[in-house]
Amino acid sequence: MVFVVDWVVRWVCAVILWVGFGCMFFPTLINATLRYTTNQSLVWSEQIVQLVFPWFIMAGAVLAAQHSRHIRLQILYMLCPPKIIIGVESVTTFVVFSACLLVVFYATQVTLLEKNTFFTLLNVTQAWSYAALVVGYSGLAVTNMTGLYRRWQENVERIEKQKS
Image 1 (cartoon, rainbow, N blue to C red):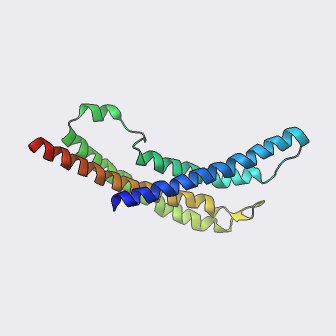
Image 2: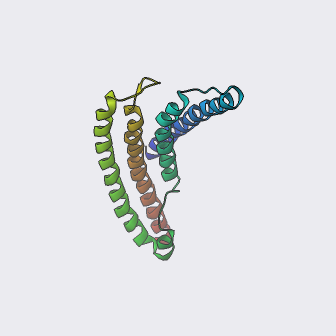
Image 3: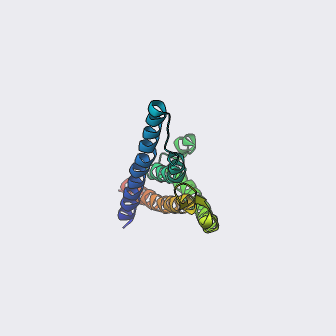
C-alpha cells in the first residue's frame, strides 16, 4: 500500500512539473519572441508564471523528498551507527510531519482568504497559487511518513539478516 501511495504522489508531481514547465516556458518564449520581433508582448504571460510557479516548486520539493534529495546533515548519518540513525530519523520525521500539517492548516486559511483576489488579466483567483502550499505540504507529509515506513522496513530486514 505504501508503494502505491508513493507511486501516485510521484506521478501527480511529475504531471504537475511537466504541465507547469510547459505553462511557464511556452508563454515566456512566445512573449520574448514577440518583444524582439514586433515590440509587442503577451500581457498575461507574467501572470501565468506567477500562478504556476508555486505548483512547480512544491511538486519539485515533494519529488526531491521522495528520492531523499532534500537538505540534511549527511555527516551525522556517516558517523552514527544504524540503530541511532533510525531513531534520529524517526524523531525528525515526526517533527517535519507536524510542521507540514501546521503549514497545511495555515495555508488553507490563507487560501480561503485569497479566494476573492484575482489575477486581473487571467481572471483566476490567487487562491490557486496558495493552494499549491496546501497540496505540496500535504504531499511532503505523506512522503515523510511513507519514507519512514520504508526505512523501518529496511532496518528490520537488516537486523534480521545480522541475527541469522
